Length: 367
Image 1 (cartoon, rainbow, N blue to C red):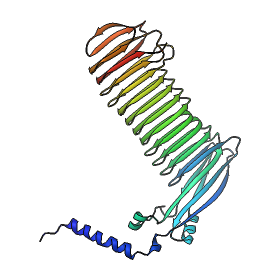
Image 2: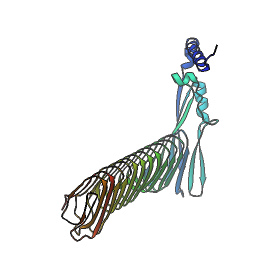
Image 3: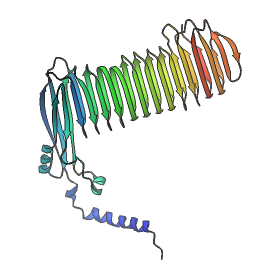
């Protein structure tokens, strides 16, 4: 007789699990949750930088004008099977303060390795040990701030210095950062507004930013990108995700491997390419010569001038398999099923558009 070992194991699990549920004391599912808050005050005299190194920790940093102190509120949270154990564990959780020339470093420390002990019952019903710390910090607004976290959300606001964030997992929210904001994350969304300049490198997560005075440089493997109101230039590279830009004053260089690209109110030069997706550009060029290089491998390509290039442009447009729709005062020099060349007005600027499979639409709607 031949037995299927997989069936034997499965049968064993099905027999044992009900027995566990019947015999298990209800008390083992109970847990005690304990929270304790502690306040630390550190002199910021001569301090130029605050560094935060944390794990399993949400961190909030707020800059204050005319403040000479770094104030740290530590919220310890523990879940254990008794009040005594919870209080004992909370006392072992701490934030170490390291001070060196011009810098304060805050490091979260947990008893042991800070891991949670979860067995099969806890995985099904919850309970079990859980430890975490949250930090709510106020600082002089002129300090530079850096974060190095393994997990947990980060919120920072009202900072006049530079801000650097490196996190393995967690969302980042930033507002009113007068200088640079640099973020590197493996997993988590990023939301920023009223920033001096922005640089992001993300493996997974959506990125949105508004009211950026300077430049934006974004690189994301998987996630959507939305930028609105950028005073400088923009570079965005996405492997998988849609890209939406609106109100960019400077030049823009945008590429997506898989996803649509929508660009509204572009004031400078535009270079944009989508390997798999539609490409839409609404150009509102500032005075002067401009360059537009747009392409898709498979998708519709649309270029609309909501503000005219007063000195005109030279047009080169080509599609392997698609149609042309041109609403322009253009003098055609070459036209075929796959190619159009011509000059609009004086031809001072240059427009090059190309798609392998898709229609091309170019229109002037502005004055």
